[in-house]
Image (tube, rainbow, N blue to C red; front, side, top):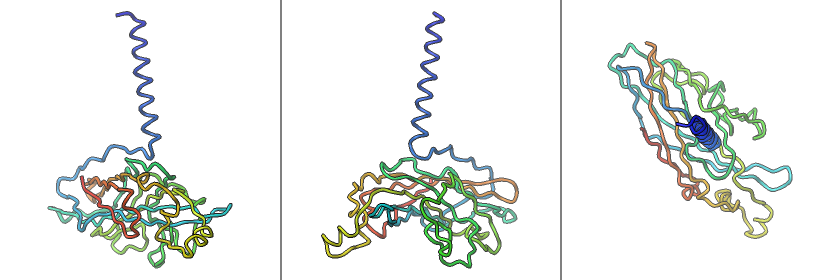
Length: 250
């Protein structure tokens, strides 16, 4: 075979691979492969149904009007199934968290509960506590993983009890639309906070998305057990203030 043909072929393959990687990394959060389960004596199961709840809210724009945002909160209630009760959990990790199908609008950011004391009953918008409220501009994406430390008596929201129980985190979608409160009042004579998506004039189908993540429970014998979770969200359903999307186990 002509050497020049071989060289050209290799170059084409490298270029195509590069394009694939660029497209993949630019399509929202890039997700890694799921972790492997290494424990043979312990498993995870959902103690209750897993779901993704949503919250639509707004913030004032410096130049007038209000920006509309949405928070997706995956929540799961886990328990361990064990043949060896001497093996106990030491930590619970959320890994590979993000959009595998990315909404067409908005800017994404992930946050996990951290060291806020459980004596603080008000979590705030971003797990920062209501006494230390943050603006959107101050937020920093915490990446595709967050760790909950297992504690006999959890004292912070970043800790979880030995029986595991409910665990949750949030994926935010900022600046999906905007509205002018004064214009709406002049037009309708009233303002309904449940209609922010309608007021913003967005197409709900632009919010179609899929959230995926893995839960990895590390155990006291040095092994781990994991499960993959996935939730498909139909944007047309998000005009319901009490929407909860189903979170499946794979």
